[in-house]
Length: 225
Image (cartoon, rainbow, N blue to C red; front, side):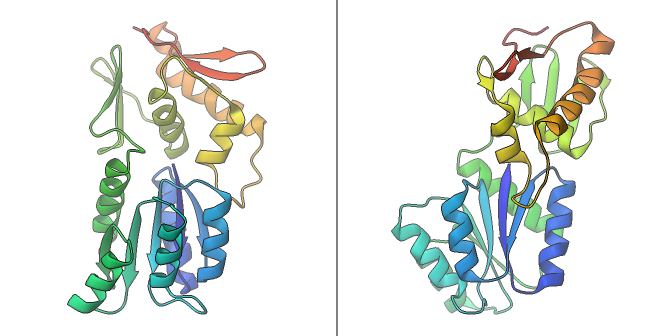
């Protein structure tokens, strides 16, 4: 899943990028409102974390303009301010949730996951295919009773594919949704991660979950056991 962080405090922006990346998100960062609008117009995002106090064009106006164009990306608004007026204005301009600074990072992650669920970009509860189970809430993967440790990127790849059983997903689509705008990742990088993922979830169990469709992409086998 791809998330846009809009924050002019660069240390906080980079801290959010690092933390969310470690959770398996692809993260783009904008340091002002106009760049945020441009990025939002160029790429589909699962959610946006939007600071209110931005140079040039503040978060209220960014949110207002996005909603005016029909953009329904779930928005979590951040602000150093506190009080009913700011929360009301944030929600009235189209934000989906509001979190005052300073905030708890685990709370931000929880709010973000909830927004994405409500936005329909992810499935609530564990993802299952045969005896394979992936739980986005706990970041745990298992086949039967066997726990399978996955890296953040492997987890993100598997989650994305499990939501599309029976559909061919291209490497380009995976790059678009699971790597950030500034990434130099190529199709070869996708292949490396996919190979590592298969060695963990399939090879030890003598099964096939992800099939390569030559010249097209990857297909989750609907009835993998």
